[in-house]
Each structure stands twice: as C-alpha cells, then as structure tokens.
Image (cartoon, rainbow, N blue to C red; front, side, top):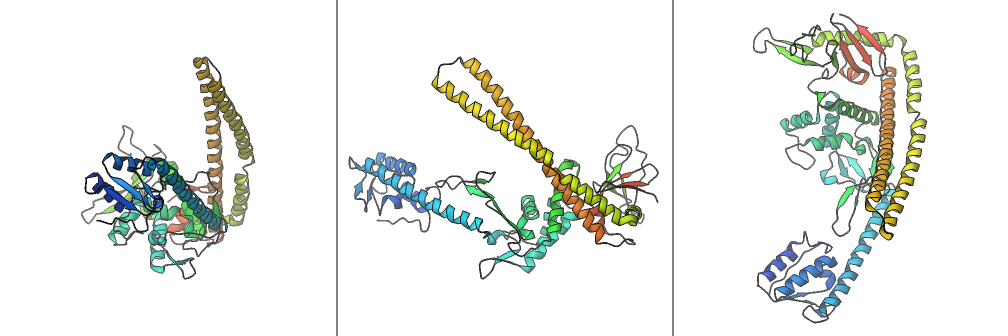
Length: 463
C-alpha cells in the first residue's frame, strides 16, 4: 500500500497537485484497484475534475472509497452521491475564496498595502508588517531612475547592472527590460500604493487579470517611506510618455540623443567618432542622414562642448526674467489642466454608449424570441456595432487627450520648480537642467541652435 499526499495544496484544481496526479497515473497504469481517501473534499473540490477523474478510474477498473461519506464509486448510487458531494465541496471552496477576497479588499479599502517582498527591490517587511527601506537595494533603485533620466533605455540600464554584477529582484544575474520598466513605473517607490491592480477571475483556476475597472481600486498616498522623490518619479513618467511618442526614433546612448534636430531634413543628430584609433580622435554630433541622400544637409557637426556652451547661453537668457516666466508657466498650466470640455464630451459619449448597448441587447433578445429575416437583422446589428465602436473610439481619444494634458501640466510644474530652485546665472554645464528644461534644439546651417524649452519658449544661441 502506498500513501499519496499534497501537503498544503488546495484541492480546487488538480493541475499543481503532484501527489494526486502521481496517484492517478499509477492507478491508470494498473498498479492498484482501490483508492481510499478521507472525504470528497480531500479528493477534489472541483466538480468537473472530480467526476472526470472518477469516471476515468472507473473505466480502468479502479474503485475509490470516500471514508467520511461512506461512498464506493462502483456502487450504483455512487456517482449521484459523488456529484452532490463534489458540488457541496466546490461551493465550500467558493465561499472560502470569497471570504479571503473580501478580506483582501477590506484591507485595501483600509489602506493596508501588500508587497511581494521576496521579489520587490528596495523594501523589506518591517517588524510591524509595514515596508522598511533596504538601504543597499534602495541605492540600486535610485541608480536605475538616475540612469533613465540621463537618457539611457531600459535595455542599456539592464546591461549596466549586469556588468556590475547587481542581482535582479529575483536574485538572478540577468535583468529583463520589463523588470526595469516595472521599477520605473511602480508608484510604491514614491511612497504611494495603488491597490488591487490585478484580481482573481476564477476561484477554481486562480487565473488573474489586470484590473480594468471590473473591481474597485484604491490609491493610498504616503503609505510608506519613499525611495524616490515624488517629483522625480513624476518626471520619469513624463519622460516615458515623451519617448513612447517618439517610437523607434528615440536613442538613449547620450543626453543629447533625440534632442538635436537637423533644420535641413528634420532628422536627429547622432554621436560620431572620427579617427577612433589614432591621436586625432574626435567626438562630434552630426545629422544622422547628412550623406545618406542626394541632397547633403547643410548643417555642420558640433562638439559636446559647443552644445553645452550654447545651452548655458540660452538658460541664462531665459532666467533674465525668471519671475515672469514662472508666472506665465503657472497661467499656462492652469489652462492645460482645464479638462471641462473633454469631460463633458466623455459624459455624452458614455450616454450614447449606454443607449447603443441597450439597443444591441434589445435587438439580440428580439431576434432570439421572434422570427426575423436574418440578413436584415445582420445589417441592423452591424450598424449598431459600428455606432458603438465609433463612440468608444471617441471616448478613448478624449481620455488620451486628458492624460496628455495632465502629463503636460506635470512637465510645466517640474519646469517651474526647476527655475525657482536654481541660480539665475549658470556658469557650468548641468546635465540634469538640460534634461529637465529642454524639449529639443534645432541646429541651423550656421551652427547655431534654436532651443525649445518645455514651457514653449524658444531662444536662439550662437557660438
């Protein structure tokens, strides 16, 4: 006689029950003709799994005896009783699952956060169960944010961490792009927590999906110590949106990448090295497609020192009337944040969506209960579907517009704070100011640069 067990594993699904599956394999292979189990609920709490397995065993001449219920599956009444008992066990699992889910959601509503500390870089579980900063891991998180704002891509950040033998949150030597992106976009690093990002769809399969409004979400501010300053975290999200809008044209190899534009052809300037292997080595920035076409671009190459010098001039010109620039930014930000028009249009779209959805439901019901000409029904249904999709697309576009306005307002807020907190005259190159203040710079044929600041101000700087 052999004993098969699955210690501490739920019976709602047989998928991950190694002991159970081994027992079934042995039984089907003819190594036994009787299985004794404590009760129906110990065998399987999923009615379908339970019945399928019992019938499969029965077809192979293997009987199952449930001790608590005194059921033998070869008994004439066995399958009926088994169906009833399995259903009861499944409902018990449902009840337990719902109670557990309710408990989680109650904690979410109360603002109590949950972290997967084992795979969450930067925090440990404190004695009272709340997150505490892990100083060594927190420095890695800060370096990731710093490298991103210096212009590096998630891929480049990952390779840098690997070269320096920094383990990933899972303790592995390899860093994936998705891990870097998750760290850069997780609000918990600024001390806040968005709760119930995912939820369990089916208590039997334990399948989870991203919460897209199906269940409530809770946002808790200042729920735990922050590793990243909230303003820096917000700036990273704005930079993410900027890079996404640029698509494949973005390059993260240097702080000047994807910032300098050729006035002749509209392409970006790229980093080039002349005489890379001899004493005449020179690093320059030049239009990426200067010689790729019949027409050779008239814009010259520039050195990093020249770009930096012109930026210092543009910055100092901007700061000549700092108070007025900040006041203008505040007014512009207020206008940008006004989303009344979009919100009104979204409300109208929602009303139209509700009406169309009701018409679709009524049409389907009518077609199911009365005889109709199906071709005509199909045309009506297709028109309602087109009407619904058009309103849905309109609503999605309006929501995207609101999000874009919020990102623009965030960018202006960062711009204003940067101006207010820095010296009126800048004498030395400051990489962080370049990244925070400059949208782009258009290089002209005479080598001058027309800088576009993130508040919309343009300043021409010459050598």
